[in-house]
Image (cartoon, rainbow, N blue to C red; front, side, top):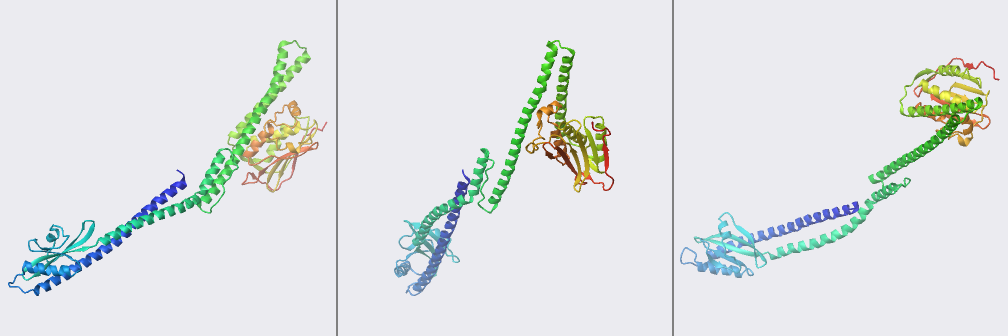
Length: 485
């Protein structure tokens, strides 16, 4: 059952119970008040008749000291006839009737309940009419008599029945009107819920951009805002998941493609070595192709392993002198005679994992070498800035088109695939650098012009954010000693 109908149903039930109990209480209160009033008047009339009977008995001439039954009948008859048809009954000391008017029941219920200290009364029904029957004791001329009266109160009971009838009709009318009003109110109150339900259904069908409309300023309005915020976060997460799935599909496709090329070459040259007799030159050439493609597969596997390990591992950072990185790189590339290297750095301490940071710098230098012609200048610079310590790798190579700069950090993406493959490139170096810098709280920045070279840099923040700034000191220089050939 819909919430609005539940609200309407429970409202009708509560209204019916409220009107029913209040109507019953009100009508019964009026009835009890009227009955109490009629009972008081009946008891008062009984007292008046008692006094009138005693007065009349004292005025009756008697031969004896005891009032006779004949005199009692005469007095009672006079009292009954003088009050507009009063109903009176007189009983003697044993409860036997001396005078009985019309309508008195043949019982002694009130006789047994009445004494000199208490008068008794009851309400009885005869032939669909209601009466108040009273009984009082009359002591006169050595006689103890019981005077009973009956007062017709049928009209009071009819008014009560009429009150119930009218109240039932009024209650039914009020329920009908109230139901119509509550139907509109419940529809208005539950409108935000219906809008939220519709939004939930649309989102379940895949419309993650759909939002619920806010139509109130109460708790339901706040719930709508919270729902929309949740929907926005869900849409963002779904978008990220879709991008991640797409990236994984592209990664798998690129990985399969990158595997296919060296494997095809390895299988082809291996088959040639197996099935043909080759001269020494061709044999050496085939073996060289197999070795080169095998090294490329090895480099690719190591890079993939590094990326996966970097994503899943927790690193232990420490304070490291920036000069140690430059000394290490200078030592590593001092035997490389195909390029001309220059190393410049400011003093400073960086908070980093040393081995991972060395891997970043070596990958950036290797990329610079692959993008440059032999004998080109490669500059590796460390610079203390206001916001942190910046590492830069500059080359004078072919450069990266502006539209390609956002893509080169994806795995297996290469700007010039033929050139990269010829130098054992797999398009994984920058992807690894990006992962390492991310866990260090930094990112790779690229400045490049086609045909003029590329500068790749990243910034490690100062102390409290990743780096300790060492002020002062001279600018050091470490360059390759060999002249450019």
